[in-house]
Length: 351
Ligand SMILES: *Cc1c(COP(=O)(O)O)cnc(C)c1O
Image (cartoon, rainbow, N blue to C red):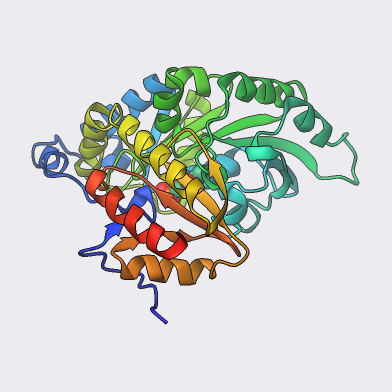
């Protein structure tokens, strides 16, 4: 059997994730001329410029540059929750399955995951999940939603649904957080500004290392008070940096140059989803509106890791993500020729 290799992807087209992009030359060049200073002393002008830019983009008072999206989620949870508090969120959300149990390990928070088709639970479900105040029960404290919904196949939650759910949470006295790892994909797919998605939330962040194509970084936004508290954790956990303007400059470049082009990624993912739904080895395709395609294998198809290995042997990398599921993600570094390679490999293996 062919083994899936974790690294170097030279010579292979890499659809494993939109995190797999390499910075472009133009992007790297912005670092050469960036104005720099001591970031944790609030003296790096380029980092401050990126924070101001993202705060304005998502309609919040302030923002803070952080090393990763995971740190954005975990800091937001630490600011919003105390030990024994409960977070209401989607079952397939990143904070539940992909952050090493951070909410429990770091903040002592419990999670109450909700189920819904495509991960789109309703405001009524949120209200029903909130616990009546009681010394027996955990304190319902935070609603955490995702835009786009990664493990549901890049689904864009309608902005009105986000607002309704946030309103239900706020009415019940909960804080609200939006994991916007791929918020800019939602912006492009929905044709609505980021503020339209982010306005109902107390905290929100965007990742620079997903569709935007940067090598490092994410930006967390909220009120002045929220960001002041977030800074305490950034400092305490060792996330405060020095001349981080070399990274922030690339983030600013990405916001200028890599947002509109997300539409190309979405179009390629739609073509891939169409193709997959024609293949006999595929039972079901979870279709989002953005750059992620997840599919369930037919009962008689090989296992996801076997399929991934066979596809890799034909030049393309995809990710097994569950007992019968695979995921492919389009991004800056996969063009039409790469898609043709993947298409050919999938047709050979699952056709
Ligand atoms: C990737 C991702 C994260 C974590 O971001 P990192 O920058 O990889 O730490 C959080 N939430 C969602 C929905 C993601 O897709």
